[in-house]
Image (cartoon, rainbow, N blue to C red):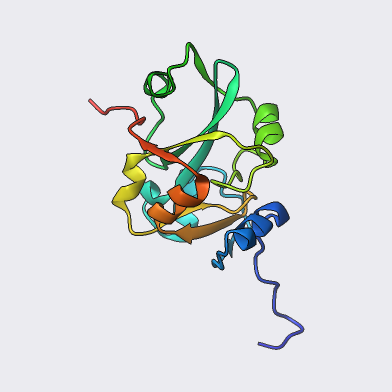
Length: 166
């Protein structure tokens, strides 16, 4: 392919690219022409199981933002998060609070490299995989990482906060 018709390599959001560099991580970033805002869309684009997708979700616990890392095939049990944090009330954060807390839009929130430092909970189910895929700061980009490294770089506490299936 000549240099004239090659497309540029997909790029992580600049803030997240800086966070990767600061962490000493040189990871491949994959980009997609269409947004992969949902775990199902991301898994289809990557060609992996939806449970290998990391959802980076912001909640508020008694009004304080907290990040929950959950596999793409599971849902967060808000009551289990509340009990884990010893909080009175836990709610999903709205889009404005997500952007204010992380610096990223919903659908592109990476597991670390945020504007503000928050408490991070990672559901134990993520550890069942050799590699997981997370947003690289945009709805169009993802990166792979082993779950143990992801937990370490996110500063997460491993907990059980997924909804139990009947």
